Length: 142
Image 1 (cartoon, rainbow, N blue to C red):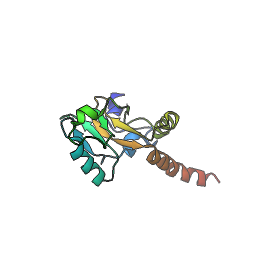
Image 2: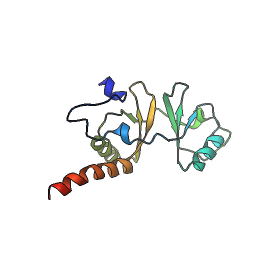
Image 3: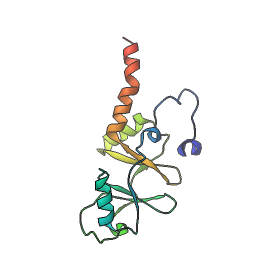
Image 4: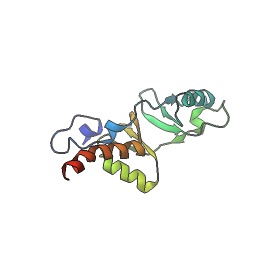
């Protein structure tokens, strides 16, 4: 399982099922815990994102900065949401999308088993990819 959790190649009948790691957006903005909220907020908004992932020097996820408004001089570590929910890259999109829907969340971080960031999976992206992957099968069965 650790092989898959770290994004290793898959084989067999499950290899064709779309997974979280393949669909996660890798361009999610990141920052350090010591950065200032105002600097991060400006950069994040300019990139069109509502949040930034807080990482350490090894790209391990420390938290999520989704409160961009407030004291711009505040250190990110003082205003971040620590220990956000994560999933592993091998989790199927079906399972990830269902979990997000059940929990009424619109996104989840995808990390390796040692907590290194792979990307951010939006529920809308997962649902769109699932619809695309099942469309040919539905057409072929008619």
